[in-house]
Length: 215
Image (cartoon, rainbow, N blue to C red; front, side, top):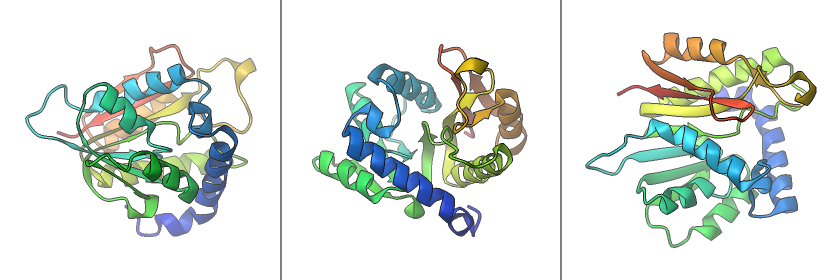
């Protein structure tokens, strides 16, 4: 990862931390508590980013869940009967505390501050690039690029993430949200991270998912 990543984005991550804590305090252990408007919207996006995982494997793979919230992805993996060495990372201490309290009996999981991010087979991130607060599109784009470098350097076999799409209806766009050009992000990942990159933009929501496969 960039050696100065957390120093460079200290103020920005503090905004994210405050927002995440406020959402969870207001809405509790619900999709709304981590910024989604429904269970269905949360699950659809989980299905998309989990496409990075192999269909079958003889051994348990390790998975970084970056921006893990209260650990909903871990619960969803259990519902699917999919076992992974799960590692949740979050910037909000209050959110991490909720995640830990909800999963004390899960033997193959851990929840840690984002600063403790370490290499795994795969990494996923759902919803972390949408809310840009008052940052300009240019500044937020730089943050996204540096964060993708963070993913790449901590994912030996691949990573996946989603972003709001610039193809969203103009009358539904909001000034505090960041809408990315999926073609630009796909091209970036294809040129910089791997020859094997997939763009999914066919699931009837105002976002897209990029899957980068490195092995």
